[in-house]
Length: 409
Ligand code: GLU
Image (cartoon, rainbow, N blue to C red; front, side, top):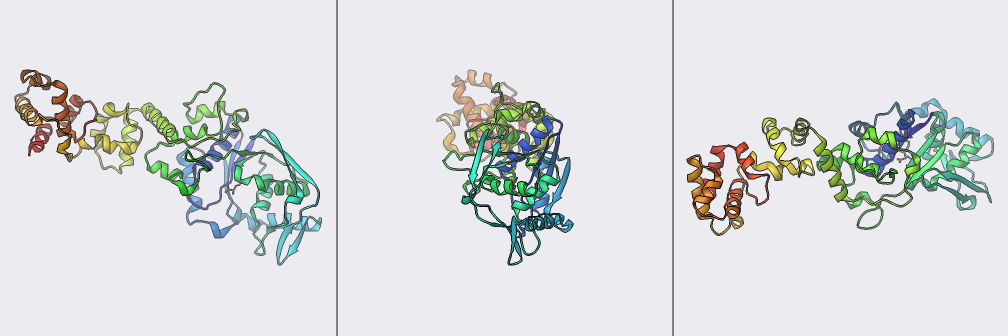
């Protein structure tokens, strides 16, 4: 049975690359009814961020990446003596030595060490002369990443290790430890780096690639996931739209891509729009309401949804597209056409007598397009808006008239 794990360090916000690792590890296990394990690698206490462990769990839950076992917390496992025991055995067998209270792995000379990467689909080999002895157990009894990862992957029965490309240089060390402890090496795969469209690797410094940040910008978890699914993996048929369950069904290691994917915002926006349109009106209403912390009345949002659902790409656009329904807009007079001082009074007069706008335009020989544009600007503050007639129906007769009057002042 497949057993995979996600093993983040609680060092701050989860980034898009971390979410991808978690998603792929999760789907690899789920695809074959295996198990997905969450392990927190917190043996480097200096780098830990307060609340980091809780934050990771909350994010994974938001994305429905639910784990079957764990979270196993490495700092708590130290007490069991499992890491110390492994380190001592390495010392006893001559593969490690004590150094100022710490234990260092002894790297052999002139050996080749290799493994087959199941993501990159190739054999990777190192010459041990390119490696240096390094600490595996610190003097305070805490293991370093290299020892902890091997001991735990073995102890937890992990069959497939999936991780970011950054970790590739650590792999030969792990391979040596597996060998010296006479453990079975799991299958290991390193995911390609995600690139920034501006060039180089996607990095935290270059803007919002944190998952929390994307949620705050109004992207839906299911859309972010769908976008991430295809950052390094592709189905046979080039299908793009996937729910998590659909993805699990088709996901396998044959689809891993060898070239580095690019983080493309327009693509993410496109996915978000697609997923928004899949939501029921009630569901979308609920999400918008939550996104804006109940600032807008739900009864009204639900009426507006049919007018905007086809064009909204992010929840955060709701205010700019539909904010005028809730409060009088600031109208920039420069947006009016040259005849607005004719158009608006006639509209007020006609509407007061319950005439249809189109009839008012005809009776006065107004150019229909210009007439409607001036009304649109007066009522919404914008030239591009949801369909106008439907909008003023939701807004109501009195509010519409009030805004037309204000615009003339
Ligand atoms: N703790 C490492 C991280 O934060 C995990 C590396 C691995 O999966 O082996 O990404």
